[in-house]
Length: 327
Image 1: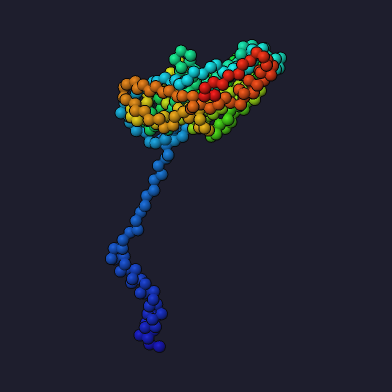
Image 2: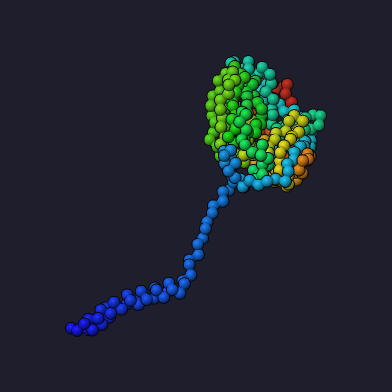
């Protein structure tokens, strides 16, 4: 076979590969368009400050156009009567070791405390619904000062506690008997521990996450004892005092959405108001007074009904049961 015939056969055998190579070269020389490059950035649900505080992440921090204070009074529209005590003075049904402590004085029912003078409602929580992006700088860090939750006379003190997620909360007791503190969180790890007599140092109870609303705290030893803890991820929450008054400082100027909670509020949320819109003015004190009628409040809890029934059984001729508006 001649050299020219060999060359033709070689080209014939490799013709498809040659065509592909030529096509690739032409495609490259013609300037083929580049594939689009998609850059994906993941924006956190919340700011780093919230995460560092152990709470829910919020939006990226932005500068506020000033800060203001919210004050007000929450009142009850009605004429409530005093609720019967949860434990009567000298209650003979208690164990002897408990009687001298728990029944030394009546254990009051704190589920609806109304000031007789101004009808101010105690233990109402008003709070910002969501952590804002522009928390006042000096309030942005989680407080290091502990919140104290005490027990005295077989009552939890205070009845409602607001604590920031990550802030120390110390459970104490000023009673000479053993108690049990049992929390019922939805998002945090539960706390269920015996509290020794006269525990003044305090046993740490930690909330790492905020809750959507106050959670109940009970004593499994003394079943009438009940209180509420409210872990939040911002500094904008307050509990009304014995006059129904509250104050929230350092709020970013602008319109905000607040929730108003009471333990006998309607439904599972127990909210008297949801998404209450209030506009805060910079460098001013904004006043918002709120009033709630009896229809907003639920009936007496079952534990109270049992206490009344038991007292009536012991003293059938000495107790008068009255139905109070809204109960």
